[in-house]
Amino acid sequence: MSSRRIRLIGIALPLAAMIAFPLVALANHQFSDVPNSNPFHGSISTIAAAGITTGCGGGRFCPKDAVTREQMAAFLGRGLGRTTASQGNISVTGSAEDHLITSVTIRAGGTSGEVGFILLNSAATLRVQGDGTCPCTFGAGVEDVDAGFNYTTVLDDDAPYHGQADLKLGSVSQTWVVPVASGTVHTFDLVSDLFVSGPVSGSMNIWGQLTATYVPFGADGGDEL
Image (cartoon, rainbow, N blue to C red; front, side, top):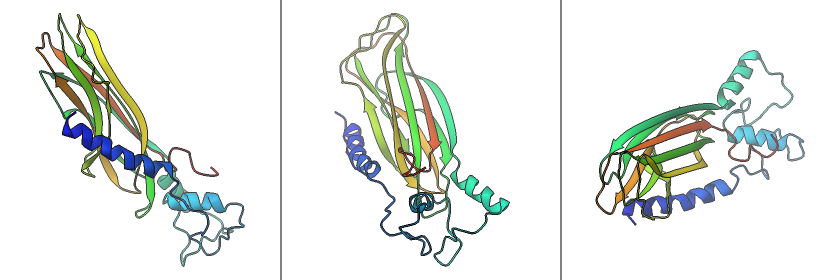
């Protein structure tokens, strides 16, 4: 197993732990005028943690105040989801670890200093053309360019593929949610991880698609929303 694969698998474990435990604690509310007994306590905590509301100043939320149209626009602008997608199709020869397939850029909503989430969907397929054969293993991973490290990787079982004419050799795909700082811009790269263990005949290409969607409340949609 390559060092890159080991590095990615090691990063995936602490990330999974971050996602598994809620980031919003309901015991002590951040606004002095929202007691724990308030029936909307959980919902207010959720949108505050996502950076959708910053309160009305002085550590207060002003829960009974009316909302103006401009305030409504600010809430919607910080909270509504957004998505971007891209496809790529590249030709490869021999081993091609970390070969860029495609990339997307997205901005998380909310205000700075809080936590948002990005839903990532990736898929990559290796094909061989003509009478080709490819004794190889194939995988793909997604890198957060701005953070400078990889979130996770998706690998097959490391079994060799021996292709036939125009045969799809293998596909990898995964969906996951990653926490990011609210209001920050992130570029995600979908890269291939191809290891060839013998002679290759015929041409190979890798097709991939990557989608990033801003989801302010994470995988479970928040506690009461």
